[in-house]
Image (tube, rainbow, N blue to C red):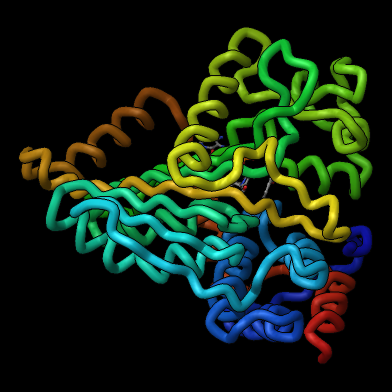
Length: 347
Ligand code: NDP
Ligand code: PYC
């Protein structure tokens, strides 16, 4: 695992240099060139945008999964048409993003032809944020939703054992005259990655986030990770709402795709593995089929109303600001972490 965050000043790294470094890490640990290029770009993008729970922090986990033989870094996905607007993709125990990108153009073509299209991916390892998957659709004028389930680490409301994964969902829509509005959020009180970062850095987690191994509320991230669990999002008055979203995501990302439920992920024979092998669903819609002729303008107007009402920012705006800063000044990386990445790359 990575060392503690050092107090030394961060080293700025250009986006392209980080992509190249991560690509070398993936290649050195057995992926194909195509998979290395896709995962490196994806992970560097997370770091660039400040999605740190799924940035370079995740590299040892990717490497652990590859080294243990849990994931196939050279998998060749297969794509079949289940209908005129329904693609089924078998990731063949490979990473989700290469499987998704193998059929993405067909999905866009189907959405443009039919107004809506679905892609159901199974046997796929998703270990990243979802926004990189959906944001580009909105830049092409499409509305996109995606759902992924992960591994059992979230108890249902009132429950005693973990059934759900942290189960993220993401939504992206075009906005006239601006960047797409994208939200990307776990169905749990926090992402497992953030709990691990809190444990590593010695911080507590907010009250109401999780329970220990006896089911008692705790703010100790280590207790959550050591036999405890997270709670669905929603807080004291609405944890059942997060529980229903987590349930829906198990249904859409696993039951519907043929992927494993979070509870069925069993990597016990692969010590070091960290990437859950489950499923992912995409729903892509051509908003022009709504017939208003003014979809993106209406969305922009709604955002204006939301801000005028007092919300200081929309989801995605923090990322876009961070992206601009990273592209201008370099991505700030802890020097110790950068050294570890270089060692993993064999530099
Ligand atoms: P956050 O709670 O950090 O953010 C969720 C969303 O809310 C983001 O779109 C964020 O936008 C937005 N947001 C946050 N604060 C505000 C605010 N004050 N006002 C308006 N919008 C706000 O995300 P999570 O911790 O739930 O998830 C983190 C990441 O972990 C996600 O990228 C998710 O995909 C990933 N994840 C992946 C899993 C997997 O299995 N692959 C499992 C679980 C999580 P912004 O980004 O601009 O701040
Ligand atoms: O942060 O919860 C998480 C997570 C699970 C799988 C990948 N990320």
